[in-house]
Length: 287
Ligand code: ZN
Image (cartoon, rainbow, N blue to C red; front, top):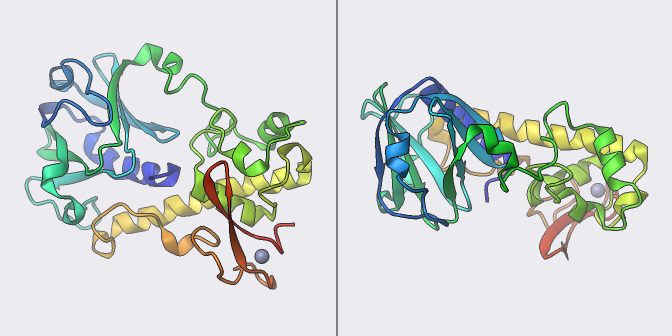
């Protein structure tokens, strides 16, 4: 499932093509994804200009000049493909048609710049909605969300206050979207390893000094993943045709039994299950 850095990479790939563009045609190939498309979806999009393409947690938000915002969640396998003047393969631009079976293309947006943006989703866990922009913050998707981890609203103080006296372990606490928005399993594992905090530690027992390290680690693992995603965008031929995770940058996730990557640590990466999800960690340096 794409996490925050992958969604941000999608946003950055799409933004130059969609921001300021007017949708001149919308082709909807089925009535639903994970949920039904909104009523009159294509008609409400056609003719609209996308004023800005933003991201909140793992949602893409296309703000329209109609007063509505197109909200898209990629689910497990959602991806966007861009074609420019029917050519599609412009170096430095975003293109992963190779991995996308056209029978799973459920929506195509055509802009006044001759760009087609196709949404392809084999498993259809993704979803889209149109919400009045003025009421976006109250919508159930967004109402309870904590601060964006890469924004100024997220700081050590956020975690000090949210974790005070909290008995739940720090791993599961970080996945709570009310505390911080958009963090998923992979980057929580990576951040805890980088900050040298054991995932089973009760959140309320993590010291302020450790929380300071953790805050910095959350930001840096996300920023590095976004940078890695940006480099796959710049040279689409090195991508495998799909928006992937940036596996090379994982130090613990999916690396059970590998030696710990921390310099001078003799530990081995272990896996356990917390809250139904795999946690990867080093029992030596994450004391
Ligand atoms: Zn270690």
